[in-house]
Length: 632
Image (cartoon, rainbow, N blue to C red; front, side, top):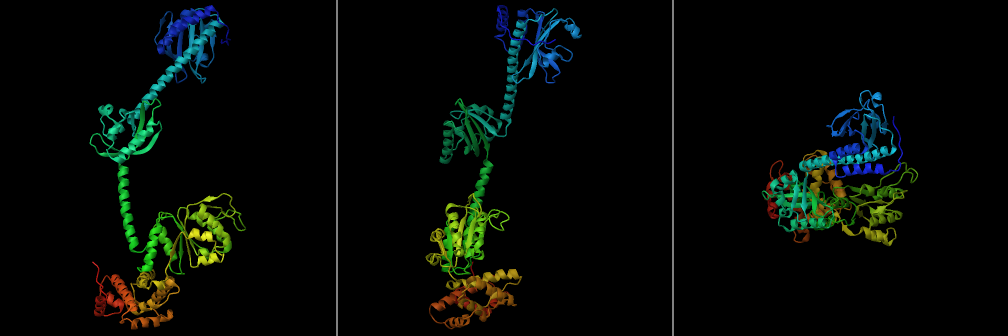
């Protein structure tokens, strides 16, 4: 049977028993403790036999840790608990059979009495049990049973300590294996950076032999260069302050051959302050690759710049002084984030300037979003620019992302900025100054990072004076003004523009290469071009649609007043003066353009003379007179 015993006071007899057992086990640990416990327990209580056993992982068997029987120790043994008095104890109950054990358990021949108590951990898990048995009766004595439970608890503590120590040993071994075999380098260093220990990865990366670990000083591997010394001193200074140092890139030299290596370094001081725990990875290949990549990128960037400046930012065609002045402004402002206001007549190419600024800026990897403010209804300008929330107004059936959000990180081009209604100008000013705005119907500000380029063909200062455009918005947009010259002020660019347009339309119309005739070019040069480059493009496209031969001819009727001006220029060709000089420059540029298109071939079906409608000898005469020579 099993009994639940109270906790009575202990008299002098029990104190002697306790003292005897305590003195017998005080100096022992582990196996010696368990042997001392069971032997002293039997001697002090007069019971013949005692053992302490642990429950095996299978939960069906036990194994003795110490077994005292009739004055001596038995070797360790194990047995199944089913059908034995131990079964109830392992179930977590104190079990006491004062007599007749052999009757209840036939396998326990010769056993008359039994007392067992479970060894229960602090988590409530049964770890094993402590038991006593005898061939004579073992009366129920509460104080003795209480004493027995006390030492069962002491056995639990020792068993827990042993298991913890075993787990720590296994854990230490696992960590030792991980330390030695880890692909990441680990090093322990003292306060003078002398190595205490290093794993295989560290030895391999640093070129250190195992026998050289104790004589290796980490600082000695740092090259004697200002940058490398500065970095390592800053890193070690942070460790000296007791702070973590993570992700620092250090340059070192291998100990065996002196080759340069780069590591990414993490170091943390030990709480004792006597050494540091350092981890690092080899990033030499990455650093060398990044350096090569930087070199190639720099070279690529340089070549792109050379090409870009040579071609006037891709689509900006011409070499006149007014246009080169604009290109220089683009060059200066593109690398900044300043707002730009492009002013000029309609058709002068303001959008091309905006694209050129964006493509040459650090935002070129992000989108360039264009908004034609004149094409938006006044009631929808705010919604298109800043977006709206669902239900913000009638018809707002879904959330709408505005152009500012679409351009986040990139550039927003506001064409025809002078057409924005006054009520929207205040919100636009806030977006430019605070870099945030509210969607229509929204309550939470939206943060943005947008560069704004505005363009207009209106006189904004006059609009400011007339109170139709906010002065504060004007000055916020006009940080860097660019004025686009009209085509009539850069007529020397017309030959290059015409050649560019013919090439573009030839590819689009799937036509063979064509050239502009001399007389047609004179007409184009003489015209005032109120519609600027857009008008010129339309005229060239119309001429190419109507042209069947290799030459593109312009009908004088398309350009009112141009024919008279052309004749005047032609009649003045031989006279001295600025007009004749300018015409010669135009003619020279046109001949050079056609020669370049023809590969500097003068005669034949694909020669420049045929394209210009001239006899080859005449062309050679003009080339000689105008000092035109094939470039090397």
